[in-house]
Image (tube, rainbow, N blue to C red):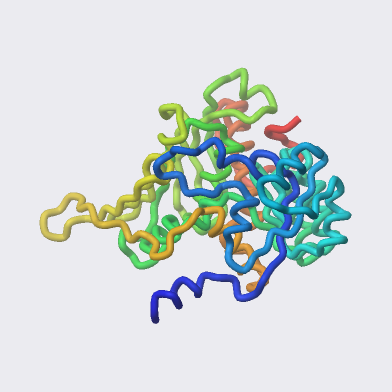
Length: 357
C-alpha cells in the first residue's frame, strides 16, 4: 500500500453536510485561547474542524444570540444562519450537527434534532445534567436511528489510536489499570478522561469509590473536582487523581499492562512506550508508534463520526460513553456523601444531577 492510500483510507467514503448549533466558545472561538501553545493541535473548535475535515462541508449554524451568529459569519464565511435550529434543519438538511451549547439545553436539542431526522449528532460534553436526560437522549436516538457521538475528541486522537493499537498487538501485555492525574472537575474536563478510560477498558464500569476535594462542594449540585477508583466489568481498574498541580499541561494518563505501560504526559504533548527488558529486567523505553497521518483530534473526530454514519453505529465515543462519564462523576460524589462507600452502577436514582442550573 502506498502512502496516499493509507491517508485516503481514513477519509469518509461519502460527502456530508454539517452544521453547528451553538456559535460560542466550543463551536467557534476556543482556539483564540491557545495561540502560542507549542504543541496545541489546532483546531479544537467545531466549526474550523468541520471546515478542515475531508468530505465534510460546513453549511449552516444556529444560535439564539444574533451577535454570536454575526461573529460566526465573519470568521467562517457561512451565510445560512438561524436562531431556530429546527428551521435550519428543515432548510439545509445537514447530515451531521455539532451541538456545542451549554448542558442545560443539550438534552432538548439532541432529542429535537434526532426527531427532525438528522443522521448524526456530535454533542459536546458534559452530556447533560441528569441521568434521566441522558437516558432520554440515547433512547430517542436509538428509536430514530440517529448516530449519537460525544465530542470527547481524544477518543479519536491519532496518538491514542496508536496506543490502543500497541495494546492490541500485545506490546505491554494485557491492560490491567489506568491512572490519570488531572486538576480538573469531574464532569466537564473529566468527561474526556472517563470517556477515554471507557474506550481503553473496553467494558462498562460497575462500581466506584470517591473522595471529593471539598465537603461543601460535595453537598451541592455543581460540578466539582474529586478523586476516585473505578472498577470495570473485565477487572480493569482506574484511578482518578484531582490533587495534581493546577494547569492543563499537567494532565497525565498512564495505561499499565502486565508487561509494560504507555504514558501520555503534559496534556497529550508527549507519549512514551515502556516494556520489560527481556535481557536485563527492569523497564525499557521505546520510540512511541506515532500516527503516520497526525491531525487535530477534533478533525479526526468529525471524520470519524461521518465514517460511523457509513458503518451504521458509533463505536469510538457513543452516547453510552457520555452517559457513563456523567454517571461515574455522580457516583463518585455520592460515594463521598455516603461516607466513602462503594457505589454500584448503574445508579437507581436517575434524577441525580451534576452541574448545570
